Length: 168
Image (cartoon, rainbow, N blue to C red):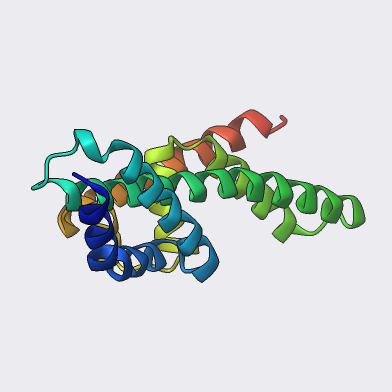
């Protein structure tokens, strides 16, 4: 592939990949930043990519870079939320809502990333099963079964944490 082909691919796929990223990230600036990273990555590797597989490469790279951003923000968000919860519990340790939030945040942080991403997309990003399936390049039934497992795992973690923290 040469630079002319790269420019053609860029023009043909720029809007599609941007829309795809917007569905995942729901933020214009983040989507544009990731889009630029995707095409830079493609540019550096275009010699090794089959001409028939470039579109798959673009979408898969966009998906992976977007999820990496979500994961990194989730980790930062959890830390920030735990700090806020800590401050709130210092103000009023008797408030049960703070205790529930703390338990949920700690349990969520213990989930395997594959489950955390699904729950993130469903509850925090407010995506439907169909949107999640499209984002993750899977079927709706696979999303459904994985979300069932993720919720069971979250419940199990919460249950274990409650048992460990229960004082007789």
